Length: 207
Image (cartoon, rainbow, N blue to C red; front, side):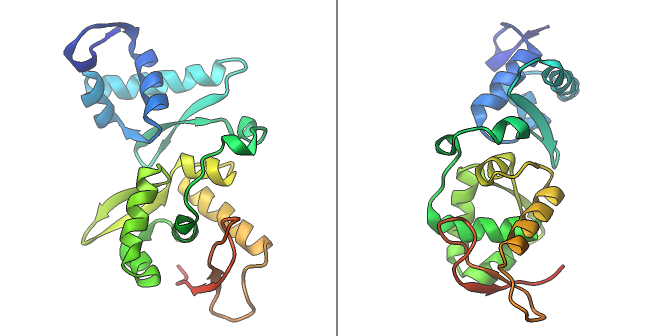
């Protein structure tokens, strides 16, 4: 099956086009978005994504895989391979964004309104920049947005998971093991610093 990219016929199979599109985009894309980009029906895209996913699993020595997160598909480095990558190759973001990123990871899916309560009006800028870096996803939920982490976030923080529940659990374990909680009944997550974790104290709500 050849592709119809931008209205023109392509000599490449749809699976090949999907692999290249997901790799080049650097962000998660829904089947509907991929359908609009590549000119295929959405059901064709969904079927091809599953085929590609299975193909990558069978690919010997391959470093990449595709995963579905919250209805969107993303290309990522396999966790067992990511563990061996040089630190310099991992995504870096401005230190000012680390606190917001940590709060979102810890409480995801986190209402943007709650992040604004904790960080003030600058939270809107942080969310926009984190989204531009491909670190978080924003989904409309009533009068606010629900914020969740992406596979790029997992890669940047060395998390072996992409499922948001597993990322949240992993991140909380990292925070707990690092001794970032005080002995008070109201737990406090400390403001992240250069290592992405600790400096000051911020009260957070429990689920």
